[in-house]
Length: 465
Ligand code: NAD
Ligand code: UDX
Image 1 (cartoon, helix red, strand yellow):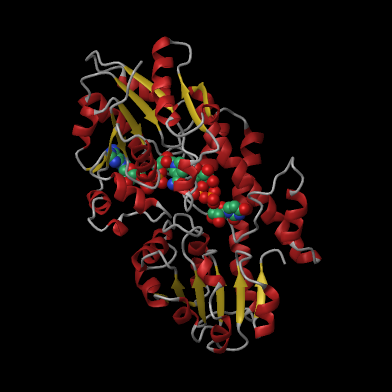
Image 2 (cartoon, rainbow, N blue to C red; image 1 turned 90 degrees about the vertical axis):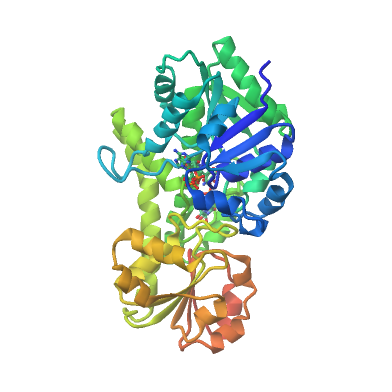
């Protein structure tokens, strides 16, 4: 049986970092080296003050503190880590393509391919390659093609082991996963042996019945399917939220009533200003692209609607602010509470806050942003990336401040865009007193209690109510 002694993970991001930290914690006899070409990111992972690691996740810094320099290492020496490893996880970014064929839809696999080529160049002994990144179905075939054509006799087994963690709960999700999925070549003894080696790593802490083994293609496609189903639930409830606003129904009550049907289930039915994050949109667009490339246009259209609904939800929330403020926000101060795409993470990728702010800037608003975990430069970079407004205009109109009270002071309106717990606990009476009147409060997360806010004097609007 293959006993794994050395693991290398290429990509020290939101998945590679936490996943490897938990593997190192649970398997102290396995050496885990996480490598990245981003020197700044690796330096942050190695920062002597563990609170400065580049990713904020509850519980993560404690694990890094426990395992770092024991059996968990962060390095920029990719070749050395590849050379030493028995098992290599590829956990690099696979964003939506921004050029060429499939632009705006397909996953950009150039970083995946670069990893495969680097492994092919460096490896001198047999390796198990694990796809940890989310990939289009059949990517393993392309990896195999690259790896098997070096002529140096090194043999590879390619496994698919998609990651289901959600940001903000990454440590909990990794320590107690609903399931672990491992796809491999189940028809060959070598394939089965490689799968067993990875099963054994997870079995250190995950009950065996929760570790599923499948063929590679099922595993690859299951990941895209899982994200599409989850996002579809959010778009479904968001669609109903608009109908609730027109009819006097309350979307939270509808979600509760529907979710108590055990066939539907209660999770992922929280109406919001729209889902964000690096995965849902990217993975559904990729699914749509794959379906189209097989000529399955009805399948593609069905899933694309999830994205269209989400875009609509973000836009209509921003439009509601403008309409409510007497059809103009020009020169008005709007406080944005929360920039991360959800609470308990510093990740802002595809966050609804970016799009709502961009819309408000087009209406010439003055925007003041506060988020407890996001740095000012990230806010500016996110807005600049959209290319709707010049860098100068963004820096002139957008201010990032260090606390919520400062953001709300003398504002015409507040928009709550991330459900950080601290926003529930604000001294809302003082916030109200320090605002211009009428004081408008837009809750994009159904975080705040309408009744108490209205009693304080706010003009209160929340999604689906
Ligand atoms: P990320 O951008 O945070 O991290 C990827 C890292 O890979 C970057 O630091 C980058 O510098 C590094 N990298 C790229 N090419 C490299 C190379 N050739 N050599 C060394 N390092 C390289 O991305 P992420 O959020 O960790 O996502 C990684 C993958 O996992 C994606 O496919 C994503 O879809 C998937 N995924 C993400 C999540 C999530 O919650 N973020 C959850 C499940 C799956
Ligand atoms: C998602 C998947 O949940 C995870 O399994 C996968 O590995 C990566 O993609 P993530 O994007 O990190 O995880 O967070 P998630 O909790 O799924 O939230 C995504 C977005 O949907 C957030 O903006 C969140 O606020 C929003 N959301 C989620 C809702 O608006 N309502 C809900 O009921 C749930």
